[in-house]
Amino acid sequence: MTQKLNLQPYKIQGISTVRCGTEICCLEGVLWITQEGDLTDYIVNCGEKFVVDRKGKVVLQGLNMPSAFSLN
Image 1 (spheres, helix red, strand yellow):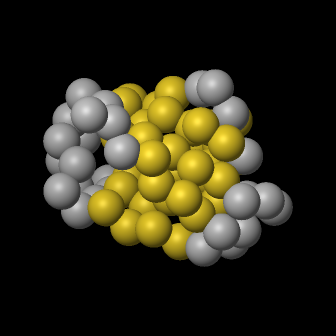
Image 2 (image 1 turned 120 degrees about the horizontal axis):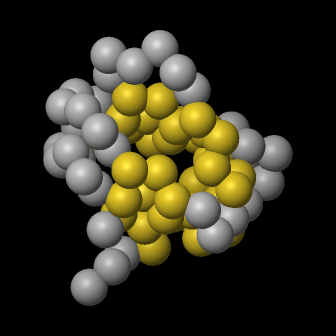
């Protein structure tokens, strides 16, 4: 079962238990995503996915509007 997680605008959510290959699916709004050891920041729009490709903490932030995502 996929769980929908909500973020208020500019709220930061850190996830330390995510595994390589996990998909972060943006269900609403826009997400900013960064992962430990990666110098690149990613913008993920509604309907898009980001695949975690390394070990370590992942940090998400909802941009400009309420956002929602799921982990698969």
